[in-house]
Length: 526
Image (cartoon, rainbow, N blue to C red):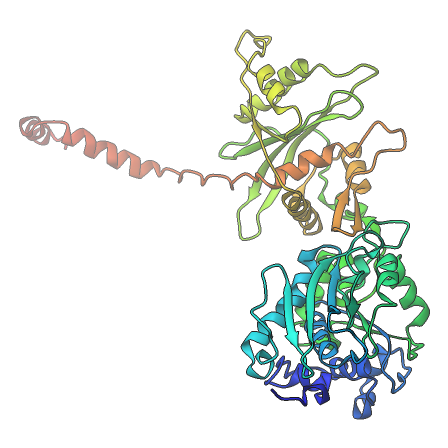
């Protein structure tokens, strides 16, 4: 076994093809590799992006106990963390540990799935590189554990683990170091069960000499310990803590092309700030601008008449008590590659002091959708069985004709709903969705908020000031994004009168026998 592994720098571990093979590391990435170990930045300091990552303050040439690495996505944060974990496992001082002492490096995140990518980098690389594979005690486990044997014979476990209250998953062992993966998503002690303060307190006294706490993450909402530490210590590096921040062009210019940057900025301002600029984003903002909505609204609030050859889809968001029961009818007005759609009708039933009668509303819905050739309405899971049973007992219409309506339940995951809302948002921004000029519909859209949470970005439908509305048109619109109708059918070609007369003569001629045709020719009729 090569006993000189401890002398290999973190920069070499990460960039050498013999190890983690990040051969195209940018100057900013190399600066991070050196700063973690307290090595001189040397020629790297002449790069403007390197200086900006440290807020123009050169870090001390001393190994920091804690290192916060805030960078754009696709910036090799997980790769850095996995290499740093291996380096710590090989080099921390274990001279006074008992033979029976267990030594571990936990990779901690909000949940195990989010931490697994860092572990996967380490496990896959160690198995693939002979110079690293020699340190594996056995094959990595599916549970997220890698056992490595140091040159002195000690075994260190690098383990994926989820954060727990008061850091209960991190105690009872010596630690060669800790990686808090995507740490910006861990909240403070008052806000979350999985919080970074309790977990940090649990490990800080258990780390062996030479070990470190490393915090690789993209920024998140502007609160919590990582935000506070970054605000206070970025540009003030010490032997206790160094903070680096780097946008996408600084860590992966090949991925972050101008086109990709502009696309992200236009489609998702929050993701643009956090995932590219590596800046903390406001926790909440409006999903739709009033200007975009106005640009999508036609002149009238009246429903559009049914159009031949057009397909229609109806969606509803039922309610009976405090919220409104809403209905949407949608059609496609322009075919791909950039299809356009129109909300031909938006209607709501609002409870006025008493709860709505579901049977009455369903009767009125059946009358409303019938002119559009519809007898089916898409709905969510809310009371769908009871409503379907009621729909089978509709009363005859005023003219005596029978009413018919069937409810189709749309079972959607949280991801499905998020994707539908993103589709709605993009259609509004691209002016590919037309609305009736309904002030209540506009109000509902303007109230939709996008909020950053520990589970990711989600759309929130807040209640109105009087508490009687919950942006009730929006769920029906969101549902429609998942069942978009096809483009209008092509119109039949126009008939040529002369051609039709000629065809009629041929058909008439073919319908007579030869004797009749001869008589007509003698008479001059043919």
